[in-house]
Length: 303
Ligand code: FAD
Image (cartoon, rainbow, N blue to C red; front, top):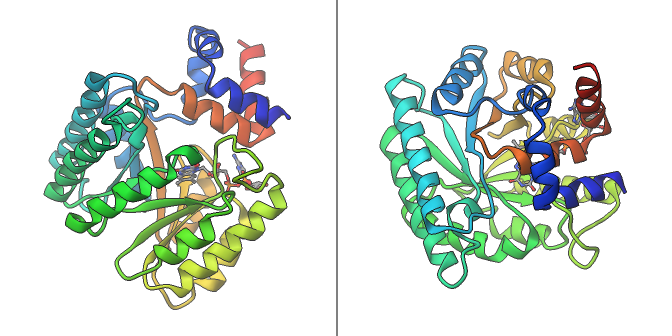
């Protein structure tokens, strides 16, 4: 119920204004978001890389309704990739892109605009030795996102996809994407989805996660296990014995566990969001975990 309300608020312009304009919110947001500008993302990257962790960086933004905003997002990513390269941090880095931030939701030509823009980012990533992963958004975008993935992979075979264990369709998508060279991030799923397309029960989502994980681990691709859930992490460790894969977690969440995984020699990649459009991302983090919401409310009450 609380999760549903917070996810509804994540898409509400009024709730957005109320939260964004509250001066007390910003310090709390800082736990989950690396900063507003490119140098903030570079600083966070350096700290993480020095502690043995890899990174994927997300320039925050989604549901873009203007072509100019989509182009601005592309520019932000190309500047970021060039700044990472200047600092010797680009090799092995990854950027995570939401296609709705580069035009997918624009009426008419949205799909093509998003494809062209994603291609520009993939090209910039290739130029500095980095990779690109396409984030997955709500289920109405899944087909378009997977189509764009297929088109990009013709030129950039290392572009990665995200699959969400809460969707019924994901088992089939995982089989399609389990071939050689395919990079697939498996997560539980962060959006509010109807029962017609997604499991509603947490235990069912977890069971499907493990089913899909098995398909990816038995396939020829490179699985990326995006979860903070200790049980999922343990199961991935067992299923992944003798093959290459990586763990992924979000910036600011379970940092000690992130470091412990990196210390034992496994690849631990941290998803680092930055930029001023943090609202939707932040609300999804609050919806995921009552403790995150309690942290937020406590911080507001003590300021
Ligand atoms: P949950 O079911 O939220 O938590 C399970 C258990 O994990 C908890 O019981 C607890 O033991 C532990 N845990 C979780 N959070 C914490 C915490 N803050 N502190 C301590 N313990 C904790 N979703 C999308 O829809 N599309 C995407 O493209 C996408 N990309 C992602 C990329 C990465 C790298 C990650 C990590 C997540 C991504 N997500 C994405 C979000 C994802 O779908 C989930 O909403 C989110 O990761 C929460 O699910 P969980 O697997 O961590 O487990």
